[in-house]
Image (cartoon, rainbow, N blue to C red; front, side, top):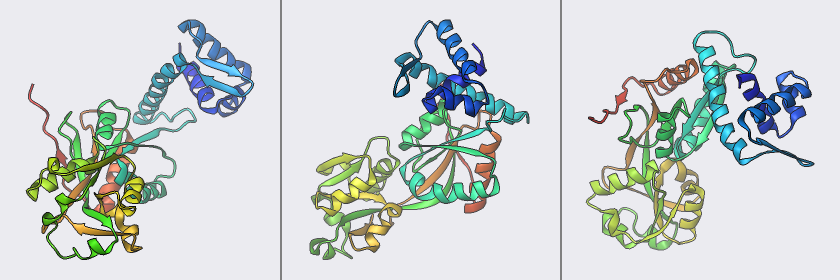
Length: 310
């Protein structure tokens, strides 16, 4: 088994076509077919299922694809680190981001990054904050963006943006009459729609409510949802209230579709963080992105999570 064979396999899997993969790799189709046949023979497994509709991964192929993609990206990291070029593919910077930074902060950050470094290739994964940290610690992503700090694994966090969590409610007369009143006096009475477990927004919501003397267990939980748009639509329809990033609620509040209330007198401020594993070799492109984020947001301080005592 060699990297050329794995590269051919990955391209066929992604393109779902031997001929398209051959064109991308500047190889003949028989050469690509020979690479795949050699892999299947060596592993004693059918990796690709051929049909009149195209090519699809078998179960064994899906398993190999996950490993092969990581091996090829590691090869690109080695080439980039030692200035060898990337064999025509270019290094890929893998970025994991939780929902709020992915949807509301990353587009501008990556646009600015690409303007300065047009040759860099980017691959973005959207997950929750716990998923981001897991991807960093398993080195499936080079840098991440989270809406909270998770005490696991000894990651390095760079807080770069202050986000405000707010209570959102339907824009009805009942809630309009509560504007200016102490939210702690009525919030427990309302059904609450929560983000999913692992969400930075959910973790920070619990922290901020606790600061107000409110336990999450006091609420009637109407639903748990992953998608912020679904949450906002559910709130608008009267299903309950929720606590979301002010960034996510801004357009609906401005349009009069939702009302927002601050989380107590102190507000609901939380840091959005860039996260990486400083103990692991950093891809040059990742270092450039970290510098770009510092430049955009004028950040100087870095918070390093303490590693657990063993």
